Length: 395
Image (cartoon, rainbow, N blue to C red; front, side, top):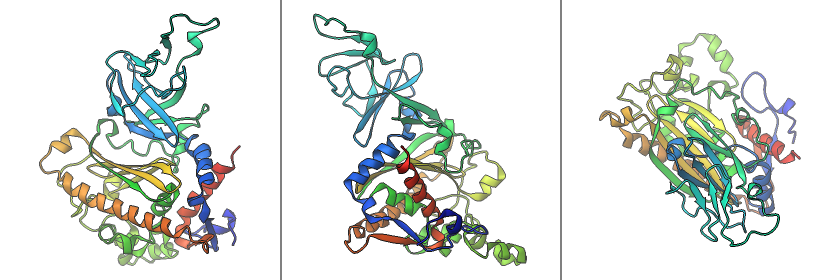
């Protein structure tokens, strides 16, 4: 099978032209492979930690676990957000045992031997009666972790040399959501599910729509092009000819993409009954805009709410799925906004995805199945797998 990108990817449409192998099956359950991915991918990239409002006030903190690593994020009295490894410099005990809260004092105090650190990470007190010769408090501050706020979200990076944040966006556009009031959004509902699958399995499912007609019947009615097992117009090898033909039939959402006629948002009936966000016309017409930030999350922005989907690896065959529904306080307070319809419909779609991801994982341990194949419509799966392979090959 030929996996050369120069010959595999079509140039006149979105698709694969050659029979292309998937990643080896063992990459989805092997413990050694999982550890390599933690070290080469998850410990090197920017990861979504929490919404900024969860650590908005002084002394508010949040702890995050990434693989075997634990991080504490805290807002200082100076308003600066900082992150540290959740590890005391004395003998390595965990500093914060709670997942979130507000510190009573401006210090992080180890619950084991009471070493105390200010919120800039400096050691201010060791509890021994006599300090040994050569003891230097300035050299025993907390281990720092890079932290970044963007669009109302908090990201951390465990690498001592974090990559440019902008490189995390698969489309290269860190400004794509500038039309949405991202800084004003609040979390209205959260769905959390531990999936019995490798993290890559879920990302691969996200990157194709061959499964959409059978797995997402409700979504395929709302987004008609999904009923054709396509993600967008250019996935059809005949898209250019269809558009050039002038046949009005090809202006239908079933061919052009977007929401069905009359629909305006992702919800049970597809209708938004509030004014929504003040968006550019093209974004309002599209009905959904996706931003992908590998390996940690994707964001789906709609006319009246925004959805974030975060993945967190828990083991070779277990992944946490966390879905947050956000909107402005004004929209959430509007009686016409049907949050229940939004949550019910989108949660159904997310749980359908989780279900088939687990189904996929179940078959991967077959001793007969060493490697799969990718179909032409799975070009984005191919690109994701190339990204994984490239990251693993970096020194």
